[in-house]
Amino acid sequence: MKRRFAVFLLLSLLPFLLLSATSAQTALPEGRDLNALLKRMEQHRKANGKLAEQYTSVMFWHNRNFNKNGKTTVDESARYENVFVEGLPYSRKVEKNSKPLTGKDADEEQKRYDKAVEDRKKMSLEEKRHSLHVTFHFSLPLSYLTTLFDNRALRRETIDGRETLVVESTPRADAKPQNNEAKTALDWKQTTWIDLQDEIPARFIAEKLNDDNHQLKGTTIQLDFLRLIDKPAEGDQTEQPIWLEKEFKSKFRMKIIFINADGITEQSWSDFKKFHVDVRLLEDTVEKVEEQKPAADQPRKP
Image (cartoon, rainbow, N blue to C red; front, side):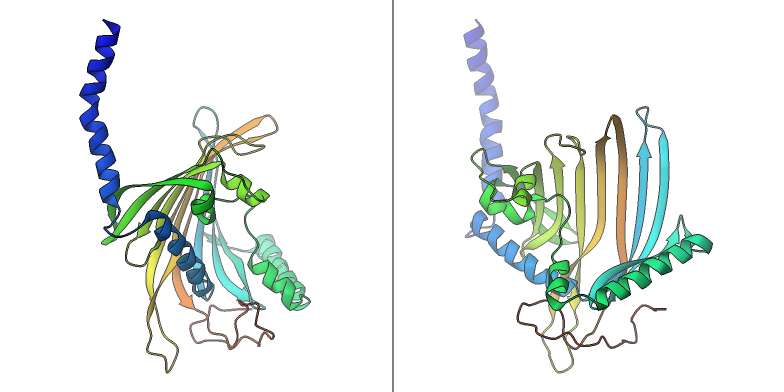
């Protein structure tokens, strides 16, 4: 009787399983290979990153922590001006909890800014290059999808009127990370919404799969991007799309010593302005960094 029931259950579920498999296969546009698409996405993402570094913005940050009963224990916010100081990105705090900085807070922020200016003036070109490539203390899967993850196309979705392919990526059982960054990437499962025209992430959500020293299983990170058209330089008629960070949301679960801390951190970026310089500190072939020239729309500096 049990065997008959198992066979009956399998047969009843078979159409749904076949439908799911067919849906995943048809999600990928005809003539496109998923692995090749992911490789192109990574190339486009790196090229886009160089363009994105040319933009200043205003960032709003909001953090809330909760106790085990769900009661809010911390609720704080801040606003930053993301600018460039001595050729490197810098976030200058201008508001705390929706109020402009005053008194001690303003003095401390000015000291932090002055120290950044002084320290960066002393940095060598190689040190500045290295600073541009500093990553988080943990790494997400985005750079390792084709080497360390199993990927499958789930479906197509429309985001802001643009067609995307939704791809789920899970760590491979036989993955062999070559460094600590790659190793920590395997702690996450990622879902990526790939813009099919530009072949670049329009959104991704990463979910923590296991506990480590501080972050606990179930932590999620979502990042959404905004598509703009990069204005060509004078004399250049070529326009190209650029994708900039728009919204970030992390629902985190952390453990510090014996204290568990759950919370939500949100960030949003707006008021994007392109920052113009004569020579940019991006490529290894750059030998000299020219003094930055103020642009008419450049955020104010003291």
